[in-house]
Image (cartoon, rainbow, N blue to C red; front, side, top):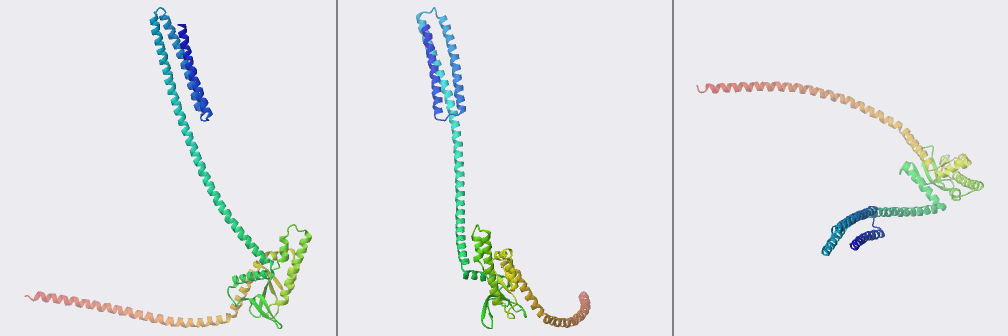
Amino acid sequence: MDRLEILMLICIGLILVLIVLELYFIVRKYKEKDMLDDSFVKEVRLLENNLKTEMTQSILSFNNEVNKQLLNVSDLSSKNITDFRIRVNQQLNDFQEKISDKFNLEFKTLTESFHHQMQNVNQKVEERLNQGFKDTNETFINIVKRVEVIDEAQKNIKALSEEMVSLQNILSNNQSRGAYGEYQLNQLLYSIYGDNNKMYQTQYAINDDQKSLRVDAVIFMPKPNSIIPIDSKFPFSAYSKLFDNEGLTKEEENSIISQFAREVKKHITDIANKYILPPKTTDYALMFVPSDGILSLLHSKSPQVIDYAREKSVTIVSPTTIIPLLSSFKAFVIDHQRSENMEKINQELLKLGKDFKIFGQEWSKLSRTIQTIKKDSDLLDSRVERISSKFDSIQDVSMIDEGSKQEDGPN
């Protein structure tokens, strides 16, 4: 009996060890695959503890049962011992089958729970990946659009650079600068006066006793004011040096400003000598510079040039300052024309007053005639109404007589 008991205890212990080893390898397998989360580990450990507890209780219960059987059968025959062994083996097999079925059921439940959790994890990962792909796609589309905008901006910058190079080429050539200034002057004159040759003309020839001089534009003023000459000048060479060269010293800057002032003075002298020719022109002229910056630089850095121009009766104007000046010339011409025609307008107004007075008299006569006709019409209407009433009375009497004759006829 001692050997049988030892053998059964060894079998039960081996089964318990196998179960624990199987659980250990399963847990190790999932850990190696990085597929096990904390909740699953907790469930496996709980299952392991439950199995150990149940195995311990079952072994204790089995030992107690064996001890009882051994005590009860100590006097039995060898046949009874053989039957006892068979029953013990049967019970051991039943116990092993129960343990195996319970373990398989719990392991199956745990596996299904794990697969369900993995499906949820996979679904969340797939959703995040899809959202990430969507966000990446939108970001890529936005990047493509921004690249298109940048490409378009680069094209505009390239076109602007070409235009700047073209403008630089224009400004670097004296003849091109002159044409640019004349064009800007013509546009300003057209914006104020329109296409009006009686107010101004461009490229006007002033005939002197010795030669004919052509000025860029003239404004026709009422006599005896004659015409106002306007000549366009663009002293760009020295002006550009102040801004193209960085890091100029004070001496270099003063030298360039002095050179710029000399160039402007030369233009002022040429205009005064060529185009101020009273009485064919006014006793002053306008010098147009197509840049407000040039005029501002003259007032701030070279006020002596402005004084020199005033002495030579030359007024320096820029695109901003020439507009109110041209508008004042236009208002002066309109006022002069209006004053010249004022006597004629007054005479016409007197004639119109006389005609209106005659018209009033004739209208009064017509009104009286209309009132007389209206009175005659009202009188005629009253007579017609009286005659119509008499006719109605006569018609009623005739109808009564005819009715009485019809009543007397059968008698």
